[in-house]
Image (cartoon, rainbow, N blue to C red; front, side, top):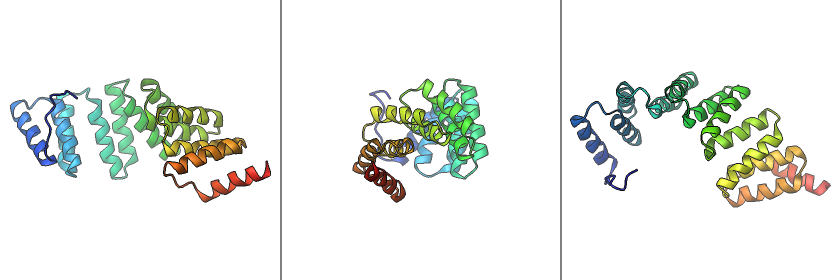
Length: 213
């Protein structure tokens, strides 16, 4: 964002400013997109959807708009439509990491672990700091029985965000799978320190493993 980006007092003011900008330049896909995001922030989802369609009409390669349409479909619980829109996003911009991350998330929800891993690996290839995609990829690796890969990926997450509790919890689970109870306890404590409620069964298994060591 430019340092000259206007500061808005509230969402309504921002929406008004963007509508005024479009009145003077109705073919600007980026402005339609920004208006859609503002409308979503104001919970005006139907209007936001129409602005996203206009954004795509004006700027067919605006991958973010396709991804936002996917997000609206996900909000309605339509995984197939969400997947379709995100596939369109990465077709519009092949290096669009967010689109691949969304595809991976949806595929994992559908139980397609290998397809999820493929998409998520692309997401983190194009953006190695994409924490959410890395976290989801680590989960997918664990579901596929690739415990070492899951640990390595979660360690990348906590290197980027040392206080990311979900990743510490996932590391606790992965180390538990390995039988490395000391490491599992270390990351369980870090998860709890950062506000994560570790599942009772995981906690019991880790402590039982320590007691039996």
